[in-house]
Length: 89
Image (cartoon, rainbow, N blue to C red):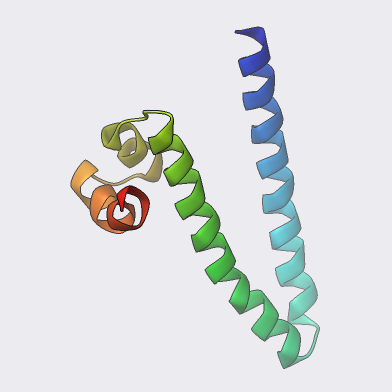
């Protein structure tokens, strides 16, 4: 179990770092050209794909839709509708 806790802590810290980097990217793009704004907007698609991959992995590990819904701040049915077809297909 110690290993699992370490991984969770490291993943949480890594995600917080990523969040800070994205915020800093937004501040940099504020002073940049429209090309960079387009790149930043394109990252939304990348983030959606990353979330879908995370849900897919959670489901493979047996995590319930109720848990995924709780983590995403939605209902079980909404989580299944959003990611279920892509993940379970």
